[in-house]
Figure 1 (cartoon, one colour):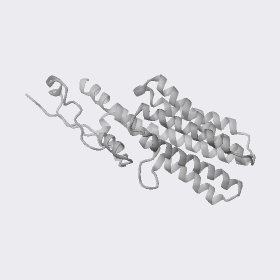
Figure 2 (cartoon, helix red, strand yellow):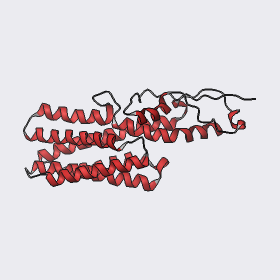
Figure 3 (spheres, one colour):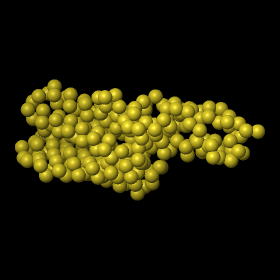
Figure 4 (cartoon, one colour):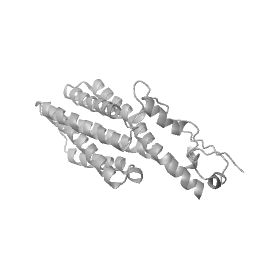
Length: 246
């Protein structure tokens, strides 16, 4: 006897078509999928009901953890900009916390891509954060930032290229564009604070947070969503298989 299984994974958070490839992959989350067409008939006979993402806690937790970790990092960068421009003494402590935030972000990669890939991503993201801080420090010192800006650009490109190798959903151009916009907004925050243009400073920091955690200006997904969607796309089928065989 043949019984068709249709798995529904409903996730309302990923309603973006950044590009054709992103749209195609996020359909894994937004629309019904049938991941077991090639499975032996004996396995297909085991279950006959539909499932949603809430049936698989790991998938939902990935989304929550990504939003939380990127939110913490962006809040930390915002605080770093304020402390650097104000000449406060907590810069080293904030940077240590930023590194811990990045550790949280990269730890989400370990179950899917392994320890080595997670560490590489971690190191590259830390390099981007440190390069951005170096730019802000030079702005505070009223020194030329050409060299620091060039390094920030190179570090961002390197991270984006590595992300694409890990998961083609994280397209190099998309990742580079979003991270560069984020960096530019925090630089605007710093410059505005130096000129005591408080409203502009606050808006820039808010815009950076929204870009990375909430959604982009054009309505596309935030970077935290894109990051989570890629991991979920590579996790979902394995998670469903484990559930089906339990």
